[in-house]
Image (tube, rainbow over all chains, first blue to last red; front, side, top):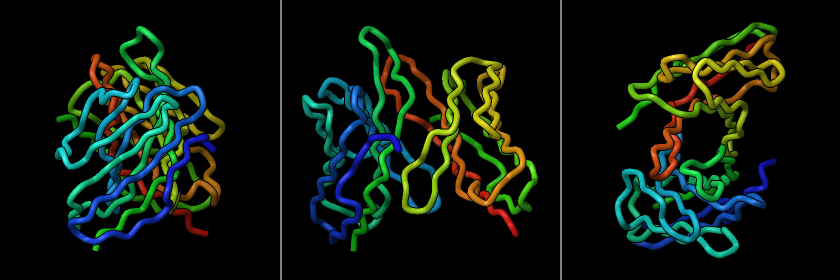
Length: 117
Length: 113
């Protein structure tokens, strides 16, 4: 077990709605990354947060946004949901040592299964 | 952007057989990671490789970071039923920006009785 938790486990929304997914990082980790995994595919990088700021982003539109809190927990928000947003959303926590330009290995939570109808 | 080619896509093997899978990239990586994912769960880290040429073992699993930094392989010896799952390679290039992992499409391992 990685110590990374996510909620909720499953979620059903309709097209056009907004959703918030939550992640609690592994103790001692200061960086969180979010990934989208469509059925039968590998995870795709959405964005990463470090010290409460977005640290970089993959090829996802602005309606995907996030927050990182002082306790390093995190939220992923998706606005104006589309059918193609149906996927497993994974968060991964890692430690970026101060002054380093890279993070250590990323550890994944169990994911939130989002279904958009 | 960077892409990972992971092969084979699926493997049907007998219990006790050895397994080999690999990943190749169009770009270099600083880190190669191998994960295993079971249905309804997140990927679980198996092996992390941080240096070109590095060979690392974790029990029956052995992985290597290719010298060109564009490839990696994972071997599983003497497979057992609990090895069933999807294995993903992932590369990380830490160029000073966000450290998002680039994943392969996975190798689905099926063990026949």
